[in-house]
Length: 474
Image 1 (spheres, rainbow, N blue to C red):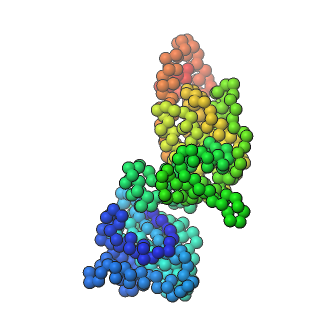
Image 2: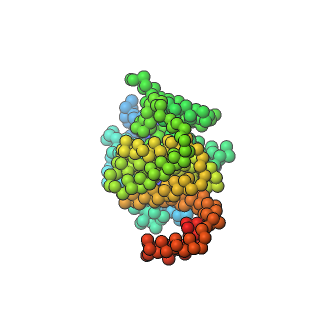
Image 3: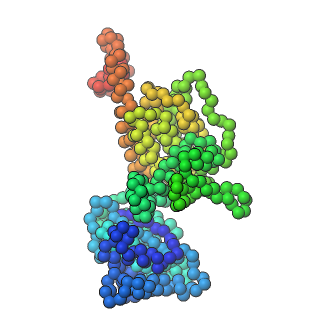
């Protein structure tokens, strides 16, 4: 069950949407399932005697009454909106069950605490099988604003309880670091344009991929622009310097601030790990192209030990830098397994964020390795596979690290990245192992290696020697 809290300023417009046909005529039988006072909330969907417009206006007047009573003191963002949707595959709830859900959510979030006679006015509208919309005006009868701090987190927490009690699929709790999900309008627009992802999702992935390889904020903006993405820096009126930015897809008119794409793509968070001016530390050509891959593999293996060291800030810094490694590894290793590497990088974008503040200085070496990998020559074969293998172990460690700290969404995302990395490793390693098998040593030499394995690791020797890859290992 997924709640999604937002605020706005147009009560009448939201009512018109909730009781209207929808953007694609998807709304069926719109009606109120719960309200602050069912006797005082006329239902535009259930009164055939009066026109829809009259009822919508009347409902707007009743719901927004406390706001109107403030006169000129009307707060600008006074509309509180929270769709609540069941997970795919869940049973459809009855109107009575949705009414209970609505009452519990408005109580948990501070909109209408149980037993509070001066609480905000609200309604819950159902116009589809799998979700309701809760609309409230965030002005109490005494003229004060409700205490809605951390309302999204509190709504999630209450929904976890409801899922358990109603026998619904248990979703993973978040920590307010997840990126915003695309709206219904954004999904509909992508569908009309024949796109698999929305503009918001596409911009997010492009921004992540660019941020992993550039060396300054200026270069970040330049590279985004070179991809056709529209970039609009925000200039502070006080300092005259850039303090934010927005992006829009090529030819689009909808702009998204960096923080609206993902919390760690905000201008302030980017400047924590990227200087604002270009720096002259771009990698220089090396005598042996394999050196950059060796350094990357060593840095990734080191990150694995950091996650067990116990310093959360340092570990969080390495997780964010490791996310850069995955993006650049996918870019640097073309081949059949590249698609799985790209999927792993995208999945890990959720696992790289948590409420723990990162120590970016501690992850300098890993981040430097990520930048170097962005410019490394393509080197198919053993070294590239070794980096994928090391990255796989870090993803496993990241899943464990998040799980130990109760970061459910991040742990699940890291596990998803593990699965993609496993598939990528198999696809990359199989032809190499096959080639090594064809070049296996003579039987006498192989028997000597078998004896060495039994002497070194007697408890594991039988399993190693029975593995199909033993001949390649020999």
